[in-house]
Amino acid sequence: MKSRLKVVKIGGNIIDNAEVLDSFLSDFSEIEGPKVLVHGGGKLASRLSSVMGVEVKMIDGRRITDDQTLDIITMVYAGKINKDIVAKLQKFNCNALGLTGADANIIRSEKRPVKEIDYGWVGDVKGVDHHILKTFIEANITPVFCAITHDGKGQLLNTNADTIASELSIGLSNVYEVDLYYCFEKAGVLRDVADDQSVMEDINSKNYPTLVENGTIADGMLPKMKNCFHALENGVTEVHIGLPNMIFGKDTVHTTLTL
Image 1: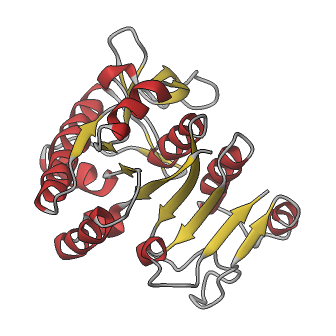
Image 2 (image 1 turned 120 degrees about the vertical axis):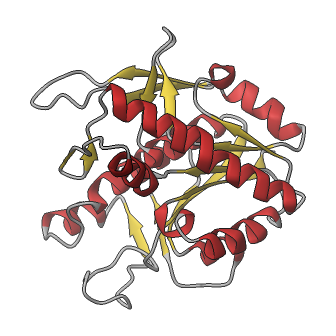
């Protein structure tokens, strides 16, 4: 029988507030059983870009990653944010290891092909080595991944953190029963974006197409939902979206996605 494992993705609403991050990591360290943490860091990368005089280029909410931008996000994601998180987890007696996809060749990607838009050094995940991850986890080491992968040819690639969380969950589902948690600033997926209380607690593959067709789920939520169902269709047990406290049983209201 497979052990249960949690993959948790956090974004800027947690990372950008030192007090909130500290509280979250304290709670995260208390989770029993195997776990993996994935983080973004786009807001801090954008602020550093501004300080350094590097233009931040976005199209439909997606970052264009040129040479200078790749240098900055590598410093921010794999350096500042990742190591701050690892150090805080060590403070809470959670033995963590900060990783990019290039480390131990865990996440291999390829550069996104140019179609209508050239996104630059952006990677689409092609494979996850769950065997080496299992080795870390069985040694009671908690992997902490930033949003950077590589192409196996020496090139780092900026990769969507939601996608990394989804692909890691799929890979690890070969050896664990995986629950994937997307933590963000709302209590879940909202039926009415103007009403924070309108959380849809259950979304599945049967009602999801209707929610997209009638515009209830739209815009920036669509890519996240695509990652959710991609994970579910490829071995992940459940996916949850909501406030961080949902992981720790402190908030009952959030969105659970199933097939």
